Image (cartoon, rainbow, N blue to C red; front, top):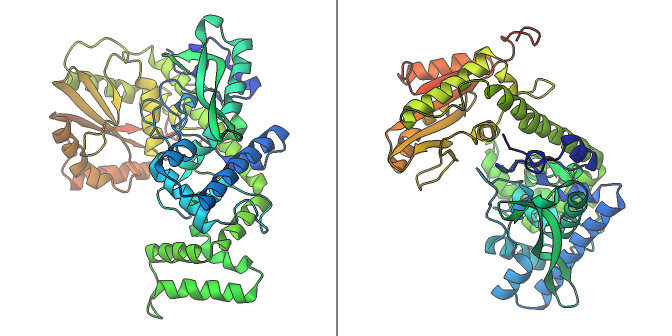
Length: 490
């Protein structure tokens, strides 16, 4: 079964690993991101140069944002970018097509450069300038936007990096020469130029490789969550006593609570955002702290990439190889509901009675704790079945994990949930029923996976309270690793 880059292009995983590139899936995006801080903090001159190129482009935008009225044409030409879907990273579900950086991001970036961060590129507190700074206090602009923007600005490097590997390792019949838009920015003409590159060809499009040491998972090192969560510590790092007093006084005034009343988390968050708008120099002190702890960024990112490689690639590959020996991939004989039930039962048996549970754990025994990761694992394992399996189709009433269908009229919905989900009871009672109505089907399964006896007990209690214990369309899967046969007996 073809899932990964090395499968499709007949490359040994060892050769790709030696080159330093991540073995991407060509079935679905993986939840990894380019973190521009890893460029800034790298000891590699090439990476530091790339970071300087990102900052130079932002300086160009800053100059334009302060010297001329930005019209729609300029926003589209200089600020808006399509997602670089060919690297197969990001939030896209069941494929690799994301939304990209549209008008919302373009306007936010322009406003931040011209109003809040007028001193961008001329920082005195931090060691350098950072792209992430422009997105720290703007709602709706997060890690995906930062990563997409950084990826677009270093796309020329990624194209050359992939071309070098392709010419040496990929069979010529699996490559093509592509004209790629926005490969390099020309500062004389103030426009993006295209380039020609020999690259791997997949479904009439090219594929991009990315070095593993540029990737992270969950969030970039300089991120909005840490800024807000650690906000109360930031003013203490301001050396100017008068300024420090003004900042703390303003922050307290924004809370506007009674003296003996504790502010809520949401009130504290709003007060922090307001204070950052009033005293944007605070962000520099936060970034200075992040710069000082840059070694941790590299270590954490390396661990996250290692976890991703173990779980999304090695575990899935082993899982699929052994699952192929079961009835899971057999051709269907009946309707989608019966066949979906067969597939889920086959998965349950394989996970509980064989060593399929290993799919959910890395080499240290750490289990998957995100439903998006859980759903991705099943997407990768199930993609080559004979079903029309669409991950998380959204029909206006909300998303569902998978649909198994034989044509338009015979369709069954399947949701994979973690037993630890705090909204599990509400989901069991309401969610799939809404999706059934939206997808015009009466047939749906809810598959719940638990990783401890405590989680198992919680699920049973919820099912009892909801009077759902005996429902045939609710299936529990035991994903525990503490009650299975040892590896020597499995």
